[in-house]
Length: 489
Image (cartoon, rainbow, N blue to C red; front, top):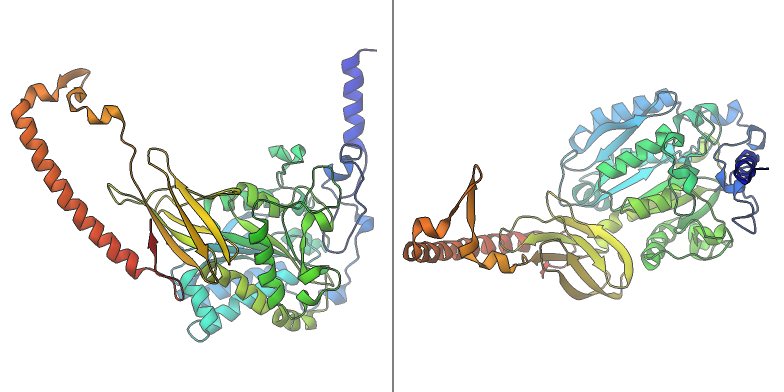
């Protein structure tokens, strides 16, 4: 028999083996001992209906329907128009809009501030997150300019809230979307090449990916149910075994997860998870998750928050669950103001912002500053010494060492342009008009050119002094409440 035909039959049988998807939130399925031996366990994103909990009518009483949720979001936008805007990032399989609430003192305007996103209801049968996120939005609106934490968040962070990523799954009372795909197994994964197939990706997943591509988020969290723990990357391991797999920002993620756990009513006292936090792969590996994708491709540090032991508790428990999680959610967002380093990157010759890259020595991860403001934010664990390096093509890199204490540090970088040998040779400068080059020196004459250059240098120096003075005044004025004065490198 032809070997190529045998190979084809092998691949066909491999992908047709029925399987179930490993699920976070209490639906634990034993992890296969060998990734290569049983990779079909990880390839299936479709779910079996008979393995899912049946949600009764009584349990749904008191939860907002999708129509009621859309109405609630719209009414929030009208009631809190001074600090919010409502926008859509796409639609679900069945056409429900994926509506986002942005909360800021300048909603819809790009600023030199960090952005944070919350996503709820990733799994249709885990509706607590969508309810708690609406309660959080309304609490911020009601307490802005009354509560110091609410006011600090609104003034210094752009908070984006997507109450439901999976409205179809919620309506069907099941984990997957309308195509019965687990959306938290649908993202591209470093160990899972099948998810790279664009045509197989769900519209809800595409919407999130495009959202992250167009909006630079510093950090984020998705809300799940079925356990009580703050989960951080990596979520998968190369051989699919349960073991601790640390990502480059492991210290920062553990600190970030601890902020949520320690602020929670009882998460940190967990007997199952030390301190109420866990590395995803050590708990049990999953593949195609949103958390790892955000970190790898979105430049965004994301947590997976399991906020309720019961996936679908009765509605009268929601106010209690909100109080248990409210301080945690607020402190997690506020950590972008209270922790890490932030600043702007400028060019020394023009003082225009630069979209530079910010890296930390010893941490294989890059943060980019924005094109418009040259603004960057880098979440880091406190009480550590870091060597920060900024690079930009065409500019000389700059490095500085800092000791990050228990508050955020403002750190601005002014980069000097690289000067090539060709740039110093005035005699080789030509003005090419319609393909006819004319030597500048030949037109002006050597004596006139020297005088012109001397005057130009003096004017340029005066302009440099004025701009430098103005920028320094600006930098001295700009810092968040409680931050150290900006350091200029």
